[in-house]
Each structure stands twice: as structure tokens, then as C-alpha cells.
Length: 392
Ligand code: FEO
Image 1 (cartoon, helix red, strand yellow):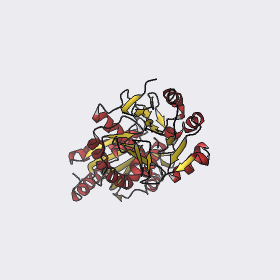
Image 2 (spheres, helix red, strand yellow; image 1 turned 90 degrees about the vertical axis):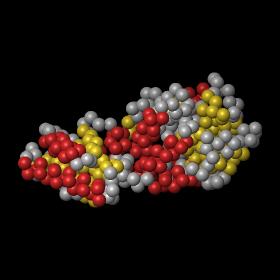
Image 3 (tube, protein in one colour; image 1 turned 45 degrees about the horizontal axis):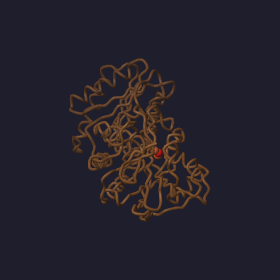
Image 4 (spheres, rainbow, N blue to C red; image 1 turned 60 degrees about the vertical axis):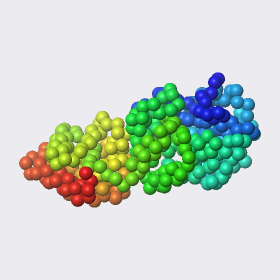
């Protein structure tokens, strides 16, 4: 099989997964994904950078059919989608050594039962000479696991960044063609996986920027030749900059909570505040997480089910709380029939967010005159806070 060449001696040997629609039983993949694996042939040694998800290992092995030796398998990240096929590759290449961070070694032993004697731990700044091809190991933990490393191929100016700068996007070509589409997919990926590690990633970006780079080769999605563009998008997402936007995830059972959401949306729009609302009965979780990457305010809207909030609301805000977006303000609106602890449940579920809570509006039954006045007040409070904080 002819390998896809990136540069002399550097080949893509990964797999495109056009049909995958869910990751971790949590993350929607509307556009599939790819597992990028790379073969680097030096004058003396050959290295494989990452493998593929076990479900696609046949594709990787087919590409390695004519490769008689692999000396090193570099594992950037022990998660299955990159390291899951390492045991198979080790079986074929009996002398191959796995190179990973010290933490990565531990994870590969724990998760994939790879024997310790076949793994060598590498450190930040260490290099590997393949003969005319020098690989530098760069420690880039917490994107999104603690063991992750990146590698820089000096002679070819390619940086392999694993999940960082990746996108879940199946494509036939190796490189980014539609920049806006890839940027959108990369933002989705950042939002769903990387957002809790915003400040760490900021430091990684500063470090990556110091390298002379022609190609950024992540482990998912197309490779970036427009290095500036993908770096600047990420720089913006990890920055402290907020947009004049309110995100409203909501559930509605008989229409009363939706009436409140619609009324608040109109009131905010009149005051010049953008609104992104998400009906959780139909919404794509990825779109919701993308919306909170840079929005200033979250308003959670829920009816009362039995004694508490709607389960779909709890599920969505549990995820938002875990992703730790840079939101600055939050509030709660919603309805109840006779009693319940919806408000308490919602506020405790988002207690990990570092936000200023704005007076909630909780209504008995359908919203009426006074309730609408309170929603107008909430809209004004939000608009005022955005202005005071120069969020425009
Ligand atoms: Fe693409 Fe964290 O695995």
C-alpha cells in the first residue's frame, strides 16, 4: 500500500473514522473523526508516532504491511484512540520500544497491559536521533490527560501535538482545506475536552510558538499549514476575553419555562446583548459547550419536575460546571407548580463556576405581569454588568 507522504521520510499511516458519532459515550461527533498516526524513517531508525483506535487497527496494520522494522513507537497520550493499537504493533515488531512520558508509561501498563520492559520513559527536552531526523520530546500535560507529550521533528519543522489543536473531522485530504469548517470543529473539540485546562494550554501555546513550525500535526482531523491561524484561534479561546453573550440552556414541559426564556431573550436583545438559547430536548451538547467558551453569562432555565430541576438541565449544567468555562455571571429562571427545590439544585450543581450570581426569577405556574417585570429587571442587570465590565 502506498503511504501518504508528508515530507521525505515522513508519512501519515492513520485511519479516518467517517461513521463515528459519539466519543466517551458523551461527546457528539457530527462529522466523524480521524486517528492520525505517523511513520518517520531516519537513516538508521524508524519511529511510529501514535497508533489508532483499536476499532481501526486493521487500517493501520494494512499500511504497515510493507514496513519491515519499527524501532520506536512514540505514545503521546495513553488514551485508546491513540495508543489502543500499540499492543498489536508490538506483537508484529518484536524489537520495538515504546517511548512515553513517565506518567504515560504507568498508564500504558495500567490501561493496555503493555509490559514495563517494553516501555522507556522520556523527559522534556530529550531528543531521539533516527539518523538525519531528530525528534525532540516536549512535555505538554493536561491536554487533557496528565501524561501527554508532544514531539517536534527538527529537520522537517513538524510539531506533533496529539489532541491539542485537533478537530473531530473526517476528511479525505491530509491538510486543512476549509479553514472556517476546521476552526469550528477545533473549537468544538477545545470546548468539549480542553476547556478545563485553559490556563495550562495558554502556557503550552506560548511554548509551541517558540518553535520554527511549518506544519502542526494533531492526532485528530486535518494537519495545519496555516500555523498562525490555528494558534491565534486557540489563543483567543484560552484568553480572558468575554463576549457580550448570554447562553441559556433550558428545558420546558408545558411551555411556561420556554415563555420565560423567550421573554428574557427579547428583553436582552433589545438591550444589545446577544443570546444563544439551547432547548435541551433537541440540542447538540457540543454546540452548547462551544457557546460557553467565551460567553460572559449563563442563565439556566428549568421547570420543576417532582421536587427538583429537569434532569436534562442538571445533566447539561453538570457538564458546564465540569468544563469550567470563563463565565463571569450566572442566573436561574424557571417555574414550579406547588413546591420544590429546583433553584437550590441548579445553584449547587454550578457551584464550581467562578461566577457572580444575579437575582433569579422563579415563577409559580405561567409567567404573568409581575414575573415579566422581574425578567425585564434581570435583563437590565445583565446588560448593566456587561457594560460595567467592558464586555461589548
Ligand atoms: Fe484523542 Fe484524548 O484522546
